[in-house]
Image (tube, rainbow, N blue to C red; front, side):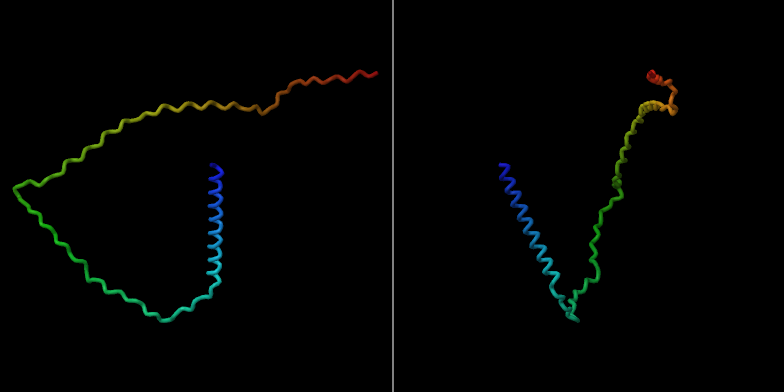
Length: 117
């Protein structure tokens, strides 16, 4: 089963390789084409004139009755208060031990020379 997937993947890569080769050859042929001379004084198409203005939409008239009270919006609810959060104190940083800069003088015993004959 795995070898079948590898075969499909290899075929896909080969197809991709050949398709990119065709694209490269086509781009090369386009670069080698001679330049086309421009035709002078071509007539430009004209657009129809735009309408003079936007039409106005009719404004609806709402019936008003002075004896009826105007509706009012209810007040917006207030946001609840956020409780205060107290963070615990940060732990203290342990002190870094100092490295001694002087070498202590330790008596080094020297070996006595061998006795001479």
